[in-house]
Length: 303
Image (cartoon, rainbow, N blue to C red):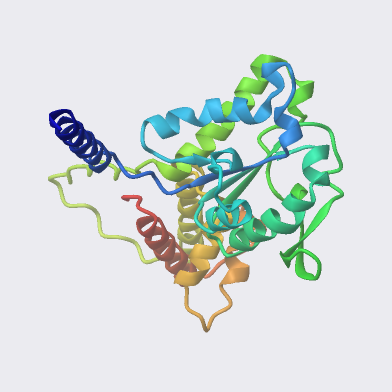
């Protein structure tokens, strides 16, 4: 009888220890990076050609530092609903990495169940898609329908997405492959840890009185308008390195709805204004510059 009592007590102690251990665990991070791949591309007998494992290894520092969590379908536990789990994850992530190969393009599940969700969310500016060229294939010629994989109505080719590598991974030397994976890491790190833009240190005003400003001339007003546009380009390109299309879309939302400003700030047009091939009204350039600064502040950059 005494032995039975001791056994029960030890069970309670074990349960209590399990409860304490469970309650002290940190909750799992929400999936933020999804790797879309064909299983065939991770089954090579040479470990250096298991592209999923190579990519996971490259991104591991992001997880160890708590910056972002990486999710692949191998994370699905036995007994869990596979399709439902993947679809739920696709609606949560902020970055999708595509390992593009013949097996990737031949996968019906990727085409019909994963890419339509990813392309829809990318169109709505909810996530960033980064394709990685693994093996030579018809990725330029292949189009994908979304949000419906059969009827669309939208279509997209992966040639519209910028890849970090111009030639396939399997045609590269190992150090070139590592460089490609590192480019992907840096791109993702900027998404989750955008650099802060510091304001320039204000200079002391001189003791002597500045000369009275000359009245503006049409030429000086045009020069100021050009400077405003150059400042927008400098902030966007050299300091915060925002995705240009995302920047233009966010900028459009900050400008008055009753004026045709989108055409003015479209990438190819803005370059023409900066290069002096087109003219712009000073008030418009000031308005765009003010909206650009607001976009940056909304994205967490201090100016």
